[in-house]
Length: 352
Image (cartoon, rainbow, N blue to C red):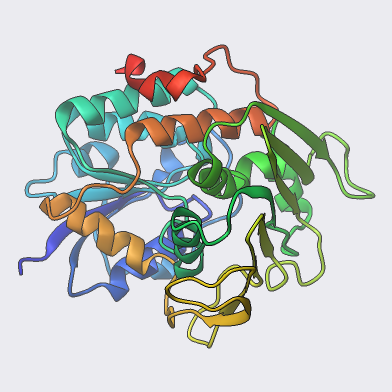
């Protein structure tokens, strides 16, 4: 099968080095045409200088050259958070399939326009929420859809880490929503997948002791549903935060706990407790092994390739992506004027 010609626009997003490394792993799928060094034109902040050794073997293009590159099958967009949508708009106008990293900026209307254009032109578009292709998260969604957990009434998750330093705290301080804006979207995507549109969103933006209170390097958001709450928490200075990241799902018939949230090239499992047996598990406690994962982004990028080839459609609709980002903005302390109607969400079709 012919390899897909792909190019990475941007090297300054926090996920840019990981994404480019993943593309190189997938040498059976992608031909990497090169990259765009976005430091010359981005206007919004990025966390730290990129690891240029990752790119030294590949051609560098200006943005204009990249967008006009003959035979280009797709791009990954890895510019700073608040420039992701404007750059992706340029790809959409040219009909270029794109994987766009998170979060989708603070201009909900511009993001709505991007999604509308991709839908109208039938352009493959994939959001870079990193848990979407995580096998443990996929197991949780499937368990819920099959009714194994009964009615979910509580979801709790954290994305603590301990790589916060003075530079990272200052970086978070560039965004009103701080760490919740920067990281929470991964879980708001998951919460909406499980529970749909929340009735109310309340957020608590804080800073750890000794840090400027305006920097918001710690926070919590609560999504309220008729019979459930979904809570997201994150802090940038939690000792051994990443290996202790946790997800808990409580339902009337079952319980799931996952910690750590992801693990690579090592055995890995989640805990499942069921009040009733089903076609796959008996009632009681189970340690459920997860498939060995070698790379965070591999399965997602393979899915992106299949979308470009027309072999699959995105498992997530444009309407879902729009709703997730509205929830993310509210949960990050941003107020939006474009509420999503509750009645069947009007399928969110009105935005197209």
